Image (cartoon, rainbow, N blue to C red):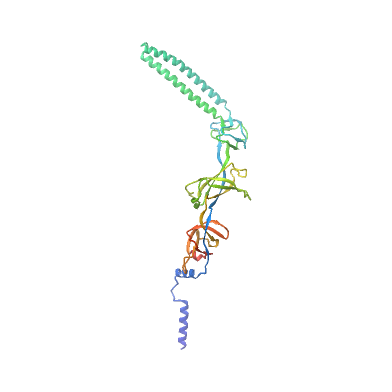
Length: 354
């Protein structure tokens, strides 16, 4: 009887420990754990939202160019200083043009001489033509006369081409602004030697500023040219914004960041917005879009934004991807495949995502 009691005890111990060599199915155990969790729920409510995005970047002049002479020489005069406003076509600096002027005068004199030769040749040609018509001029002399007048006319064209080249060289002795703007950089004094194409001045057109940045990929559904925007200086404590427009939205995403390239234009910028300064831009959509208002505790970021929605009694909640449109503190507005009255899990445990 004592041995029977001992055997019964051992059977109970083995039964509690499980059969040696057998393990519980983790998938079944996971489902059982999920089913037995005590979950809290919130409700998805329909909401309307005006989409917006924030873009940051540098404010660049609408036009900017480095200027230098096309020909080498010595700078004879500086006609502007740094910070001066200039108009399109206004002279900025002048090289010593003595040699260029002499070359042009020589070329112009050559043109006058060639034209005088043509004038004399034309008279000889007319006399020779009359003699040929009267039969008093041989064919050889007539051919020589024709060749002479053609050569004289070609000489005029050649002289004019040389004069035009000399004139262009003379014109290049004066550096002019290609557009209106402000001289941001330049030499301190005249007398310096410069090579052809060497930058001497920096000209910025600050009548308008532009910011090139990127927006999230999902903004492509509503972000378009012509939308109003507000620009805020990046200075600490700046709260006053200034009007701007979306100038351009490029059709392709940036390859490296998968974000949407956007260009913003600020016309007649105020003094608070400086060229080459950092700024942020807020762009709003043209109209409201449909969304869902949820408790913020329902949002999960594993690996991207989603919520878990109850599908029925005893069933595991369904994972639904969402895009956050607005953060309102304790609640958020999202877009996603949700239904009216959907129950979303609050503070969902990690086991749901796994």
